[in-house]
Image (cartoon, rainbow, N blue to C red; front, side):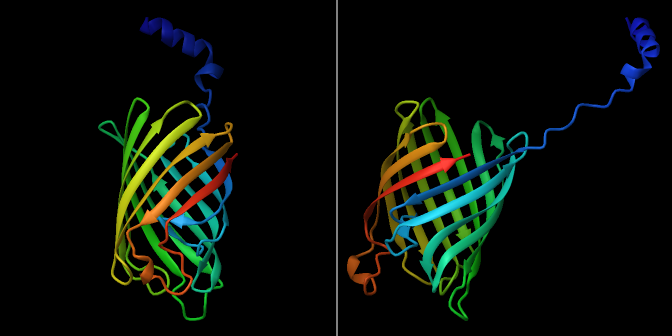
Length: 233
C-alpha cells in the first residue's frame, strides 16, 4: 500500500503540491437594543431613565476567543455615553463552560477632573443540565469610574429554558466597594425569543439598600421592573 501511494504521488505532482485549505477567519456579531432602565449589577446607571446600547464582537472560528467594542447611554459624572473595548476567552474545562474577559470603559465628556475610565475583569463558570443552566460570576475592578475605587461583585444565576422561545432566570449577587455602599442585589424575569434575531426581556431588579440612603431623586438602588428589546445580526 505504501508503494502504491508513493507511485500515485509521483504520477500526480500537481495534486501532491496542492496548498492546504484556507483557515477560517472567524465571524462577527452585531447587537443593538433599548430598555426602560440601564441596570448593571442590579443598580441603575441611567438614574432610572431609558437607554440604548450597541456592540460589535468578533469570534475566532472555534469560538474560543473574542474581542469587540460597545457603547451604552448612561448618566454618570456628567457623562451620558459610555464606550468600551473588550477581549475574552471561552474554554471548556471538565464539562464546565468558562468565560474570562477584560473590558476597558470610558465615560465620554465626563466632568472635568472626574476619573472617567476603568478596567473591569470578569470570570464566569457555567454548567448546563438539560434545560437548566447555572452560572457563577466574579467581577472586579482595581479602580472604578468617578469617586469609586476598587470593587468586587459576586453573583449566582440559574436559568430554565421552558420552551425553545421562552426562558426564565433569576440571580442574586453581592457588591463590596472601597468607596460606596456595599449591597446585595437580585433580579428575576423572563426572556422571549421573538425570532432568531430579536429578544424581549422583562425583569424585576432590586437591592437591599434603604431608600433613605439615596441622594435627592437618585434612583440608583431602587427596585424597578425593566423591559428591554435586543436585536442581533
